[in-house]
Image 1 (cartoon, protein in one colour):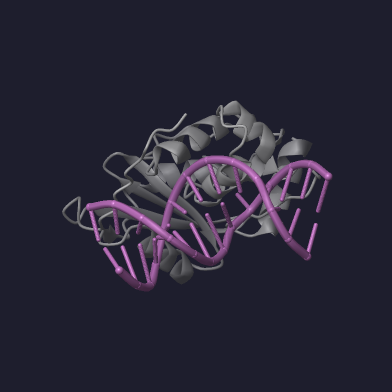
Image 2 (cartoon, helix red, strand yellow; image 1 turned 90 degrees about the vertical axis):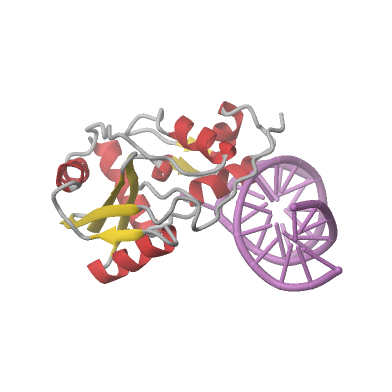
Length: 181
DNA sequence: TTTAGAGAACGCG
DNA sequence: CGCGTTCTCTAAA
């Protein structure tokens, strides 16, 4: 299968959109949840608020940001609740932004239940691109929505954890926590 | 805008 | 350690 993508990413395509975000503390560290008009567009984990805000700005070049709790507070609360209670499902309206290929990977990821893991190989098989193992890993790496899109549940064939955008230690912690629940 | 090259959270010999 | 496979981004033409 081929599906050419034309993933235009011109920073000014959407006439300076506004993104609201809120930051809170969890057992994993500080968490930032961001929202566009379409839904939650980013869930980032980091050491401090400043780093998180910078990270967000990198993700959405050209956007305007509003550090306002109101529109995002319920989402943030739910994410933090999820961290505290492993196994709970995290169902938010997501604003997925990526190529067709990335969305296929991300959508498939959402179906992986907490407490279980899959390998990159298996994931590639599930999206019908058994050859694209490495590309699948890249798509996981491009995930902007921590926890909601559980890329932390994808591991290597040899049992290794591979990487995690927000630190392998957190990945390890999440897997262990979910397995225990 | 098209293209070539590099590199990526892999897996295998 | 090197190579195959696929996707993406970047520099260059």
